[in-house]
Length: 488
Image 1 (cartoon, rainbow, N blue to C red):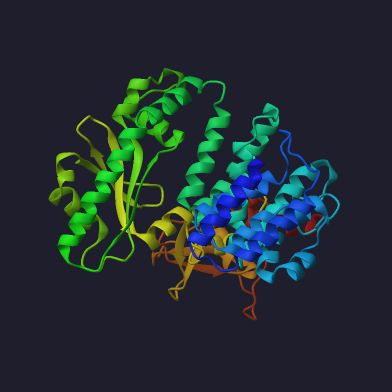
Image 2 (image 1 turned 90 degrees about the vertical axis):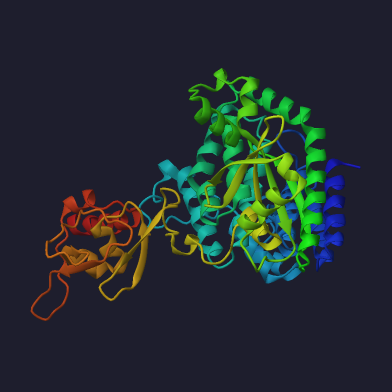
């Protein structure tokens, strides 16, 4: 059997174990993609179908549904094989067609220069314009169907993992694109798995000339601790099961996961702990002084009587684990998820957390509801903004804007007429006037004062210097369009 056949068989077997619906659609998508990609090969010489199968495998491992897995298998058939989105919808369903459409790149054959988009109306920068348009489309469709983002995450992760055959300049271009668009999107969706692993692959590729010893130390450490980690996992499972049985509640253990941290996480911990400035200065002995594994204790049900950090502390205090794992401190990850750092009897450090199965899935995959993806501007060309502040109007309406925004940006966010006519603002009920270039802070209450004519209509008072007063690309675009028309 070929590699892709082995991987696909594993996908199907895992889906059957999970009693997933519509497995037949996944098989149908695989056969469809295999036929369309026939005689296509990757730069490494492997059959092209291996790539969509590996992308599908990543998403199956993360427990995405069969529509998403089918979309992963089909994600390159439109772009690379001439299949139409209508054909995908007719052969499969609308959901799958929409996801595939979201991740299908804009090519020079179907690129339409847009006079409204100041960054994509020149042939000199067509390649950059195509990239911008492709991600603008992904974000636009993704706001309504966020599964498209996850196909893109898994697709890029697999591409980065198999990029060795490319020349250095192409690797660097791929890393820059990933940092500009994809990692920020993963952060906005709060997907720890893709955020951590995409950043890690970029780190490994960008430092490949100097990280050989570090990677060897990492691999050797993980290999040497393999048997110990297996025993530790079994011990934790046994002690947790005994403890929750003694509680006489309906809570039950789903599984214990012990997995190594990424190279980048360990590198950041080591360089912070030892104040090492160069990757080449890291030694194998440094590994024992930082957490190298994440331990997740996952329960089937939500815990009602106490929070999970309390439950974790009880487990570590009231079981035999108290003789083996000693709490050191409480820490938080990028997404403000809490965990304990613990040390075992032989000085290994671990990050350990306790949660429900649903919460674990949300931490790994992120969420498709209530994220800041819904408020980002899909027409931007400068990359994805990930940090937002909340600003209040006098009527207490909450407005989310990028964290670096000025009062002028806020005015244009409310309405272009308010932006073009704004003179100054009163911030947080202060009697003092604040100029339009004032940078806003989270929680500010802003009352904008506009220039009005005798009929109480807004008067445009925009000046060329305003371009220096705004920090948001959307505001800059509106002003540039206005001044182009005015001076032409």
